[in-house]
Image (cartoon, rainbow, N blue to C red; front, top):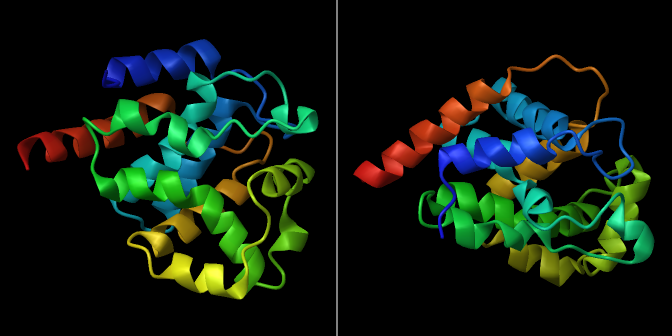
Length: 186
């Protein structure tokens, strides 16, 4: 079953006010901030859509507040993909799928990165397999959309600021709609 634009709106309207695991933002605020950071960086519509939708899996697989404290990796990077694959291209889906491994990679290739992670990101890092070896990082960097996933990851990490002004839900749903329409006509 594919998620429609209306389904995505409903998920954010129904569950968007849930806290974003130990951070001072909600799930919706995190999504809006991620999308806004991507736009501010000049990302194309596909990558803006990926940034906005990257944690949609949390809303499809509700695990309660801060599941990492209970040793749960909700595999959110994979959970939404079967529902989005019929309507979105790999340019959107692959950065979403790879954004967790991008964190593992960045810890291996950027010596300052780990120190910038929030407490919840450090907990989830261990549950997600830990820091990549140099070899695993090099392999990751060869994957299609790896650089987009690294950008998405950095926006993800910054999208946790209380009361940050962003465009609204309708704005980012219109980006997603453009990307869906582009895929449908391709």
